[in-house]
Amino acid sequence: MKIYNSLTKSKQEFVPIHEGKVGMYVCGPTVYNYIHIGNARPMIVFDTVRRYLEYKGYEVNYVSNFTDVDDKIIKKANEEGVEPSVISERYIAECQKDMEALNVREATHHPKATEEIPEMIQMISDLIEKGHAYEVNGTVYYRVRSFPGYGKLSKKNLDEMQSGHRDILVAGESEKEDPMDFVLWKPKKEGEPFWPSPWSDGRPGWHIECSVMSKKYVGDTLDIHAGGEDLIFPHHENEIAQSEAANDAPFSKYWMHNAFLNIDNKKMSKSAGNFFTVREIGEKFPLSVLRFFMLSVHYRSPLNFSDTLVQAAKNGLDRILTAVDRAEELVEQLAQKPQTEERPEEQGYREQMKALVAKYEAAMDDDFNTADAIAAIFELVKLANITITGESSYSYAKELLDEIVQLCDILGIETKREEELLDADIEALIEERQQARKEKNFARADAIRDELLEKGIVLKDTREGVKWSKA
Image (cartoon, rainbow, N blue to C red):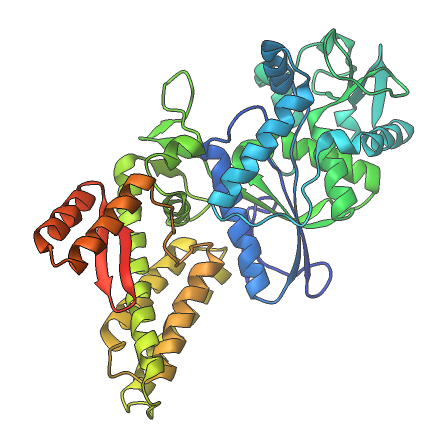
């Protein structure tokens, strides 16, 4: 298995630190509002990486944090006249609902920054003691030039940054020894949450939070650190500087970054009016479609979001779900029949199936190429549609169906169609139609079927009763 390592800018064979185990840290959201579809991409991508690693037999310690103290959280709390914790807890709960709807598995650990403050104070103290940090008027800064490897992830040169990129410097640089130094601890302002420390009552800087949480829940050296490419600089670069200086150990063997998401070929932004939350997209499309859409492009390629492209993804997903539904019905029927010997041609079909599974695995082994993996699933679907019939052997039909379901599951694609509760009016109409059929009032029964179709509900009469699906 090869992973593109952002640190070396090359694909490298994946060899974990401890055989059979993977320690993985993914930067999570700052919880001050509903998550947007840009947040959703790394959640979906790295959840899929985790699932595939588990499929390959690794025990994965998957850690993803919540940043629950931040200027944006404090601003929203002040606007609403509540404590910042009220805002963060509200949106952590909402984020978890969205992640569940996106079929993102619960992390092994979901640490919150505010619960790890003592460890942050300890790491900052260690950095001061080692000469990598210093305090000025209650603020603690990281001494960037004390760390020789600074810039190795982003490939930025300190001198060039200082002279040519003044816009990246933070406020208060007059206190600093060097304009590039960054904040580890800052004193409280009026109305802000704070914690006592040796330097001031205040709160940690953003970067130190992830260094501490990754160390506590994974270890000094991670197998994989992941996040969006917008985090490479300064966040991940600063994490490396802090962690390696404090722990005297490499911070992460492999760095993975997903590319940006654009809306109709433009960068997503509130000012441009093209900013969408996961909730808003969920009102137009099932979120299973959003997940499928995001995996239809390699994670390191920019992803362009548009209703047309998402609709095309929905059509593709429907092809898979329809094939699985059909195969399940046939497998169920075949299970009721006396078991027959496999048909001679089924051995050849099995070879095709095995070749397509190998194609899927080769795609995933090549830096988690989900686009090619999905292409292999479509070929398996085509094979199922052609070769699973009422005359198939149960063993062959069941094996092919199980393979499709498993390979979809690795991608987090649920093959069971969502069973949504019908509202009371539609339930009443279905019941009325059943009664009309019993009374042989077929005109009324047909009228109700047409009425339901207008509401987007398709009925199918089966031996087991009425089944329905969304049009």
